[in-house]
Amino acid sequence: MLKEIKPIMYQKFINSLLENKYSRRTVEIAHSTMHNALEKAVTIGKLEKNLVEELFGDTKTFNSPRVIKISQSLINDLKDHMKYQNLNKLNMNDKYHHKLNLVKRADLPSIPIHGLRHTHAVIMLEAEVDMKYLQERLGHGSMQITSDVYLHISKKLEARNMDKYEDKLNALFIDSQKK
Image (cartoon, rainbow, N blue to C red; front, side, top):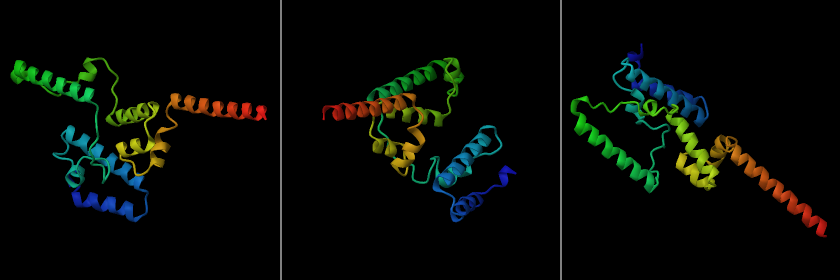
């Protein structure tokens, strides 16, 4: 049954969502869910290729492709890891298998890629980056989307905002007593 799905059928499905006035976010979620499900089907051998990638590439939304700046320390870490992998390829020859699950071997919790995105966003907010910058980095259509999704998540942000509120109230109270 999965093999019967054709790219044109999927395109018609997405078009019907848009024509029926589903929100852009709902369409993006449906698209992302379908992409992930078909990717899993490819992984377990039920499909040869992901038709969503064939139509749209592997990004989450239709206008997602963008260049994202990363820190020099991350670039250095990635280069070091690539060198490490290349040394393993040379040393292990045919026994080298790049799909080793390093997360399990390092006894780290498994976090889906989207969870890493959320973690990244919350850490950036806790570091007090500009909301506009974060919105553009995440590819959200507006700052409102970014704030709706992320601002309520962090206890640190909640505490910091409550402290700011209390500081303002105290300042107002002290000012009113001086008069």
